[in-house]
Length: 133
Image (cartoon, rainbow, N blue to C red; front, side, top):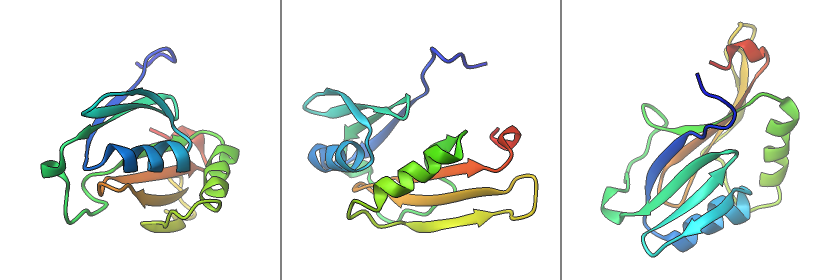
């Protein structure tokens, strides 16, 4: 099991480190941990996301399924805070906020964004926190 002192790591491709910093740091609020000529390392809501400069690996026709990543918030206030933050940016939703599985145990609020390199990111909050996993 994951302990709170462990960090999940995800590496994704990007075609511009500058645009990746603008998207993840300036607009979403991630913290830039390190920057190199070929990658940036981010503190992405407590986990590590590394954007590797590799334009040949960009998905030119992204779809939500089967590949996306994101954050599942335990607290509704944190989910609402990211929506409020987005309202102050020019970011557009890939899929606007909606409720999935309404009335079921798995009911959750969710939305999707797409970064400048076509990586799809989901943000969600489960009504019943026992359903987070």
